[in-house]
Amino acid sequence: MISRSRSHLVLIPSYNPGRKVFETVRAARAQWDPVWVVVDGSTDGTAEGLQDLARNDPGLRVLLRAKNGGKGAAVLDGLIEAASQGYTHVLAMDSDGQHPAELIGAFMAASAANPGAMVLGEPVFDASAPTIRIKGRKISNWWANLETLWSGIHDSLFGFRVYPIAPLLRVMRSSLWMRRFDFDVEAVVRLSWRGLPAINLPAPVRYFTPEQGGVSHFNYWRDNVLLTSMHSRLFAGFLVRLPFLSVRRLLRR
Image (cartoon, rainbow, N blue to C red; front, side, top):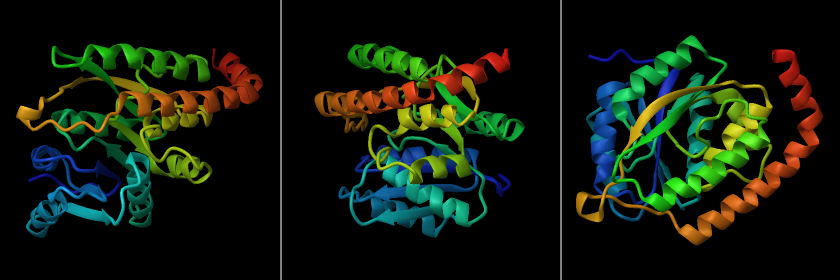
């Protein structure tokens, strides 16, 4: 029996993920208590299935959003509710089975030992990873490292990570952005600007074919335009903060 944590919870934003979500949730629950799923306006019937699971599992909670607002919007709803219940940290993971539920405990332990840090998954890809996705994330990672003066973010896009709730809430409430695919990158950059260090832990990632139940909502052109616009904003913010970031970097040496 897993003891319920009073400080850390697993938060899974979910939008039309197909049947993989049930495997994902069961795997997460085998590793941690509590697990919350934020259903972001799904129309594929998974909301009903998840609610059925939660009725028989006190360690699982399902939050419903009436309309799809994007990953960041779903995470924000979960953060607000988690903070109201006294939780201090969330481990965010995707609902499509790509992230390693078996590492939840190790990531939570790293967070408990370093509560002021972000614990970021550093993806370890296998042969299932699309080459175009691997090459594309290198560009985003380079920009994120430039925008944070190479402060230790090994991967800016991998969504398996533990956040301290309070600073992430402050960042998100002060921004009109960070509500869709841009959430993961902008969250780590802005938290780094606020002085949160990054702890990077390797984590395998799997990509599933449609025959294996894999569902992807990634749109190459739309999401890359979004990332380009986001990095333009972040770079402008970086230039404004550059003197302060430079001084802080020197003081840490």
